[in-house]
Amino acid sequence: MKIIARTAKPLDTQADVLCALVFAPHASKKAGLAAPLAAIDRALRGALSEALKQEDFTGKKDQTFNVATLGRIKAKKLVVVGLGDPAKITATELRTAFAKIARLANGEKAKTLAIALPDGLEPHFRAIAEGLCLGAYRFTKYLTGDRKPKAHLTQVTLSTTQKLGPSAKRSIDTGIQIAAAVNASRDLSNEPPNVIYPQTLAQAASDMAKEAGLKITILDFKEIKKRGMQLLQAVGQGSVHEPCLVHISYVPEKSKKRLIFVGKGITFDTGGISIKPAAGMQEMKHDMSGAANIVGLMQAVAALKPDVEVHGIMACAENMPDGNAYRPGDVWTSYEGKTVEIVNTDAEGRLVLADALTYAHKLNPDVLVDNATLTGACVVALGTTSSGWYANTEEGAEIFNAAVARSGEQMWRMPLLEELRDQLKSDVADIKHAGDRFGGSITAALFLREFIGPTKHWIHADIAGPAMADRTFRWDPKGGTGHGVLTFLAMVENADAAV
Ligand code: MN
Ligand code: ZN
Image (cartoon, rainbow, N blue to C red; front, top):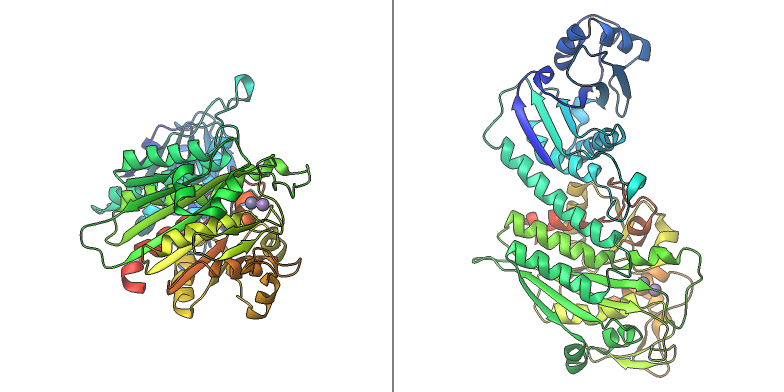
């Protein structure tokens, strides 16, 4: 998408839709419309002020209405959108508001959109650009004929009466790059599982790394077996698509900190021998969302060029029932060296993550973050609008909490209840990989903690609810595919000060 900001009258812009943004309280009943509206109203010969009166428009958040333009201005449609109290406006609120505006423009089949901004939004241009690109996102690759959308929003012009500073364009470009990275994660997650399997997921990571100038290492099945990553091997060996481990790295010249992000890349999760019920199984194509987030995150990191080292690790496998599939009752030796008794082959995510966490801690991170569509239990606990996350130190929790606050993504901290660790005791191996029905998200986190080695700060994010919710093509801070990337990026951007 192309986004241009300019100091100009909004009426001078040729666009399919003109959107006028208004802060509350807007004096709808009185004369004297807010700056962007007055000129539009004159051009419409008072039709706007008349409509404002009828609609009882106050400019409160999410208040929207359309005005017919009757050929009196260049845009075919005029949409007025309320932004609420200017004193309470935040980057998160604006990102969400502009995402909605982009969706609205797509709904109107607009290719071009002009937005008349109220004064004072220039400091938020990055969030505004992010919102527009995230909101305009659709996944239409497999639609043909009438199903193919006729138009897609490709150009947005932001017009303001204020003089723009030199950084305005840079902020917008950064926002576009970040949103494009998040949208790349969303594309991968939305692709069907016959298209995205471990090799093609690794190939996508490889294409991105090449384009972005990042280093990438891919451990194939042979290498996984050679290194003794038996948990990743066990999960992946039931599929004709062999498992792999992907390591993407961004290493700037002088870096004081090393952040490592790990993602679960189960490209399809049937549950394996402990097979899932048929209903809803198609959603399991999203079970690689954690790994998809790594691709998007690393793409954004390459664009931002922070002065800290960032690594992204993806544990990729397909969990299938097969003559060669791993079984409940199996005992496998992890890369960490601990033996693991398998009790349910549908609890495969924590197994591939365990070996990936061992691989990660060997790189000595200052902070280690994993993210995964890990447990239905987390969705039961928090619903589909929030991820859950765990931290092994309060300092690490503060760092992550600050990142969540900056991104605005909905993520709630969960407790590592030590008493539940007993559920993981095994009679035949060092540890069992899953507990009973109760506290399933917590026991999954406690299992993962066994594999972080000497890492001081570890965060585990369970993104199952938001990433698999049926809001795939929408974007808002409460989820959809790509959920988590903005938070991880906020950690990277503030790592120097925080860790
Ligand atoms: Mn599973
Ligand atoms: Zn899974």
